[in-house]
Image: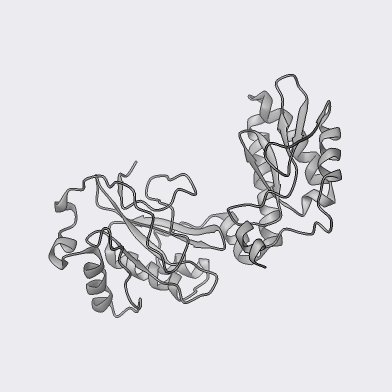
Length: 285
């Protein structure tokens, strides 16, 4: 795994060449104790005096436009970010690899990571930042910067919440089917998920799993809403239906069919299709 310095918030797991992003255009990334980096990996930063300075130099050389480069005051030498010109896209901050030379970023919109990637070329990173900042579509960003990764689910989110819900259901069911032959919990939760998908009231919601619990949310961005009951598999073969609060138990079910019925009966009034955004956005609306 690429070692990181100047890590940002921990909303999602990181893989090689990826980090999470900040949650606001205006605020710098959350600070974590950085790992020491070999200065020889970044001679351009040393020459410019900071990551922001090196980024500004590359932007000028390539004739790009990133607006004012943002700097985290607690770590100005190794932090840089750009604001987004698009209302529903968050600003991007760059993280650095500590063991190898990597410039790492991800782009979030309405609680969803839409792009991520890592490159050793700061010029390539600047081009990706400009494309994100100016609101290019995901396919166009990937054409501009080949190192940028865009998932099938991210593309579905770009098309709208209904598409995101449909693709997330398919991916969730496909994943459980792959695991169901070797894991009993996956086999049991596949039955529950298939029944939930067959129920129109639940199929319109955004599904996700956590510690083998099956959850449903009325928004497609993280943090998710907690206004829908969820299903826990029990070691005795039964199911426990909880919610909307995490510690509130609605009842126990001997069958998957009964568990689904308990969830449907516990839906809030006028529970419509999942919408774009996060639980915080719902509270503000």
